[in-house]
Structure formats: C-alpha cells, structure tokens
Length: 204
Image (cartoon, rainbow, N blue to C red; front, side, top):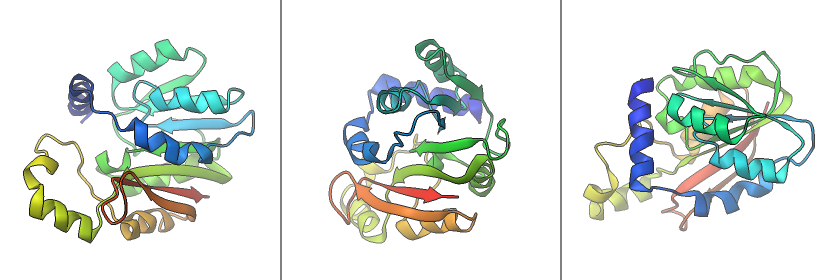
C-alpha cells in the first residue's frame, strides 16, 4: 500500500493538483495558538500544511506522519526541528497514549482502508480534552446525483486513491462511535449542496 501511495503522491505533484487555496482560509481560524503544544499532522506529505500552522503557532512541538517516504524526506529537509514518522498504515501509530494536544488530518481519511482502527489510534494518542481537525471531500446525495448525471467522466477518476466517500452523517458517525464529541462542522469550497469538501473539529 505504501508503494501505491508513493506513486499516487508523485502523480499529484506532477499534475499540479492543489486545493490549498480554498481549504486553508476555511480552517486556519481553528488552529490553536496556545504555545508549547504537541501538534501532529497525520498525512503530512511534504509539510505544506505544517508550514502554515507553524506560522500561526511557532512555539509548539510539531510531528508528522505519512506513508510516503519520498514526501517525508522533503518534509524533514524543510522542518529539521520537527519529528517525522513513516508508517505503512494507521493501525499502529508509533506515539505514546495521551501524548498529543492537537491532530490535523486534512484530506486523509478518504484514503484509509482500516478507518475504524486508525481513528481509534488517533483517539488513543490524544490527550483528554485534545482535539482533531479533519477534512475530506463532501459526498452528499444531491451532489453525487448531479455529478453522476452531468460530470461522471470528469469527476470519477479511475486512478483516484480515494477508497471511501463521506457525507456529513457518515463522517460524524465515524468519529462519535470512537468516543469523539463534535465541536464544529462546516462545508467549504463552492456552495452547499455541491460543496467540494467539509471539515469537522472534534474533542476527546
């Protein structure tokens, strides 16, 4: 699986696909500004999001996890003070229980096979009262109906690494069934019901 995502990540870079321009303005206000926190970017890639978060909160400790060793090498070069970990999947995260204050998981959950076990692991490593900020493409009934009717070939890429699709209900249920409490939920990118994505801020 790790090799597959190495190739997928490289293909994205080569194709120049980037949704940062609409994603970051929607979520930057949710980044904690308290200093000396331990903040984990789960699915950090080369560290593009980390760069922005460090700009908001420069006095915290940063960690990154990814399945792509190529991306992690670039992230390590960019942020030598941060700690990075390579994993094959999310079933076993190499961090201590109740050790993290805040987790970023942006456009990652849709790529994960064992979603339940990954979310349980993220819950385990969060401190009591810690929060997770998660985003994923939005797939509600009306949006999918419109896309299938008019834009099927353009939208459903056979080379896509997205193996799961979420509506608000399914995403919130995934978190609450693990023990998280949802603090905030919203859509972003375009307008509802054809929003491009959604985010949820949840608390342990």
